[in-house]
Length: 337
Image 1 (spheres, rainbow, N blue to C red):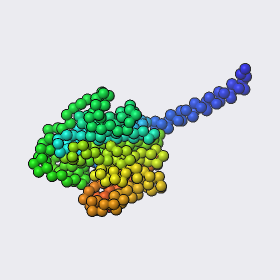
Image 2 (image 1 turned 135 degrees about the horizontal axis):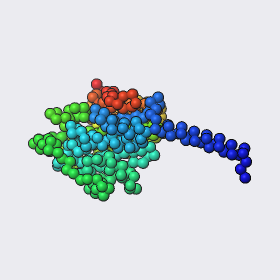
Image 3 (image 1 turned 60 degrees about the horizontal axis):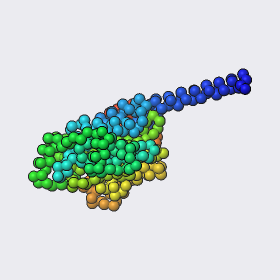
């Protein structure tokens, strides 16, 4: 039987719980710039528009995973000047536009697609693989079939402009990776080759997610897959430590399990920039002559919201978006000047 004293105690406890609950809710929806987050960072100059898409989610208390998908979808389909990601990506040497992507959340869940054709948003399909299948990666026709079954629309990805570029390339059919193609050289009137947008975000709760999406190297062998859709190579997230992503010639990133390496180096106490630098040095040490001719860059963020990058060659840049600034472009440091 309740007496007055018990009633008062219970009422006080209930009020305390209510206050705690309100405090908890406030923390999940209020940006905390003093803690370094919410924040989203992305590779290259086209990361600015991707970050703005992600910020619409993060700034209203949304989950980092949702922000990554929303941000990555913009260069995949809306940036017609970008021939390294998504719908306007350049084809392989047989004229096929094949797309690669992966995504990873704060719980270690991940999904990936590789060599997928006819679907403009591989980042969304990668998330579907993560959330709706027991698998991590689907490839080729199987990935396209799965995307259609999930309601995605098939469409021709080879545009008149990219088809014209491909046919011009066929006249000599020479293949040679071009460094820093993403920084403007891959735009109309310039040379064309590859690259990737890698994104890392921390939401208001302090949870980390990441994504990576690309059309891969232009004029590659049909079926070639780089590091972008491979968890541990093109992307890795550990919610206790931080996240990392890569850009450049994927073969060398795969050989060094680059993004996983960067996260593990941060676990050992290195700053994001120093961790990226060490990963780059390992690539150079293993293949010094190859490294002189290629570009590989890493971008990382730790649990505190501190970020940094490092590349083999100069010219690599990355975009930063937080409560203070939504269009910051930062030049990355490099081994070769």
